[in-house]
Length: 151
Image (tube, rainbow, N blue to C red; front, side, top):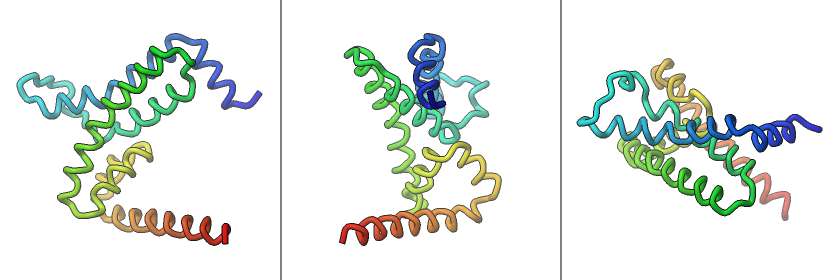
């Protein structure tokens, strides 16, 4: 039995682990709402930024989809939570368009790579554009490699 199947069995059988994943999936929309709504200001959430935790919502939704059973209500719940998670990601993609065409790539990078935004803030963004261009170049090379294999 591989570690992936052990993880899937653990998440299927342990109710508290699944509840923890549901809570993690709700973390990004709650932080996003607290950033936008100044009337319901919560001082302890002032230090937390929703952009820093976009990867948490993304990977928890992948784990929940991967381990969800075939019960219709669970699939509907996970799909609804995923739709609620997509709202902040879409907002940040549009907001980061003010930084140029590479702005949405920064958001995609922060969704896919854990702790990407704090690391980019730590480096003052000097390496960000180089890393993004390397990522774009890697995607282009991969596409050309796949296309050339089929010829």
